[in-house]
Image 1 (cartoon, rainbow, N blue to C red):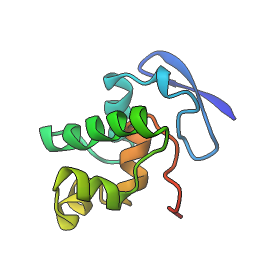
Image 2: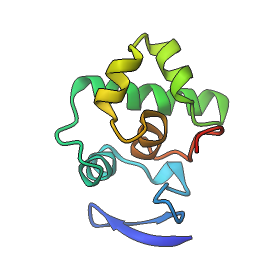
Image 3: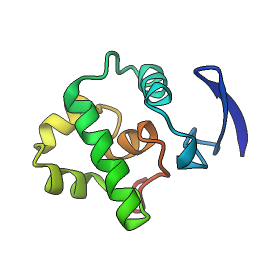
Image 4: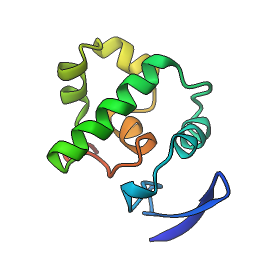
Amino acid sequence: MSTTTLTAESVEVDEQGFLLNPDQWTPEIASEIARDAGIDPMTERHWEVIDFCRRDYATTGQSPTVRRIIKQTGIPTKEMYQLFPKGPGILAAKIAGLSKPKGCI
């Protein structure tokens, strides 16, 4: 566990940069994480995925996998990889302030 500063806020992250406390998440933090991952600017479509991930986590207590995101949002797999090119499930979860989805390597 370490602490990093995002948007002038100190947040605790794990060794891979995932927030340890999803309640510390803000849209500004999401934008900064996305920018650091090479996604700038965040489009409406990005936010659609991030908002789904946050809602799904609130309901299930787990970060959704890319398969669940695709199935529940209707966003095609190809588009998910265009939106989040460095691993859509993992990157979407990280930007959403959630833990790494189970089953993702």
